[in-house]
Length: 400
Image 1 (cartoon, rainbow, N blue to C red):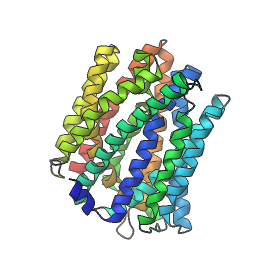
Image 2 (cartoon, helix red, strand yellow):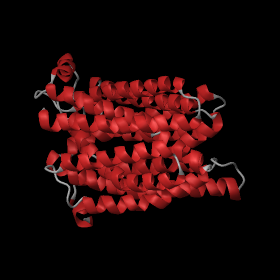
Image 3 (cartoon, rainbow, N blue to C red):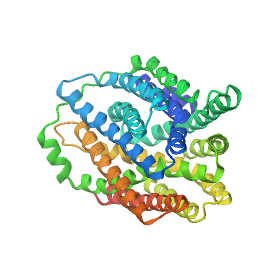
């Protein structure tokens, strides 16, 4: 497996390095920033609003920045540098915010930086890889992400312990200093990327996006993904905090279970192919729906262990196939051009569904009154998002 990884083109290895850098830095701060906001403002709805601000930043950087790069023919590989600088500055700002509006602005900035990352990363994935090799590429990407998803929270947990218990600087101080510095490791790989100047976007691209049957089926898949993402970044960490009580315990707990997913992804990479992609996706989706509903119904430590164990196995397997389908959904375009216009339009539609999911969840919260009910409903909605995801994937792969 390592030999095959070394056989990849230098630009593809550089692309993997960029993703892994982002995963490591995001793993250090990602879960904990949701815990920080909740412990500071003590409101599930405010966490959802902060996540909406972050995803809005992603959309504006991805779509707006992508359009400007197309309009002025800007070399897109430098989007990685913009991403790392903006994201690092936003994370540094988070602990210095004085009220919720500033916290939302900082989260918007974090999202804006990540929007440039995903714009550049998705464009280079589509430019550098072809469908036949994407299952293996996605497996390698996911395996590396899982290793770093173990290292990131483990390092974040260590920083929380050192900062709060040893140095007495406050629980999150070291976390918000070290995480931004990690992003700058990505600068070492930029030189190995090939240049990419995106094509001009014209009205025909927009008309094709809305009229093409395959794109219409892809919107069902995008709906499920958007709902999962807006709630999946917020509800599960808060549910674990609800049971375990402190950020340090959450970090230790997450680290302890991450190694299971690493082994699982490395093993399954040998057997995943384009022909069994949908069947494996179905099995992982069913498992994730059942375990998420179970966790939402019980919200006890015993069920949390079962939920985490099953999610550690099924989640990475699901993400590998999901990533391949994501790339395929972004690659549809007019034969006169490439994937670029569809990629931007898909991200805008993804933001729309994220916004609908977040606002819809906030509406449902008007009918419940306790933190436990907030979290249970959120987990049920995530499970529903998984079901819609599979329906969209089935229509996209089989019917279009």
